[in-house]
Image 1 (cartoon, rainbow, N blue to C red):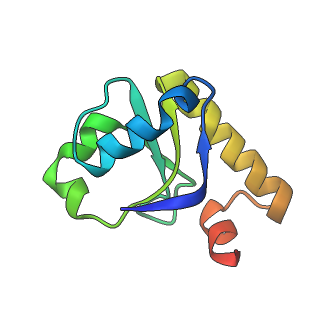
Image 2: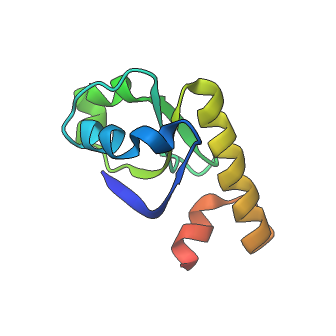
Length: 103
């Protein structure tokens, strides 16, 4: 699992940012935390997972690129909105993967 250098973090998640990141890296559940990643396929812009889902072997073995974290589902989708709007302002497109690759 790789982490974006300028990780997008929701307002409530800022207080627990370090704890959320360390829990995910150590494969420990962090209730209420959501992880935002680049999509597995080219059809989506981003994917949102509750942190406990990442405990499954399938996700631990996979190559994921974490773009942001949010505390609660609603905050996670606000973070997704921030990422996509930032991408649009920088590139004029909604393709987050292209924005990351161009940096």
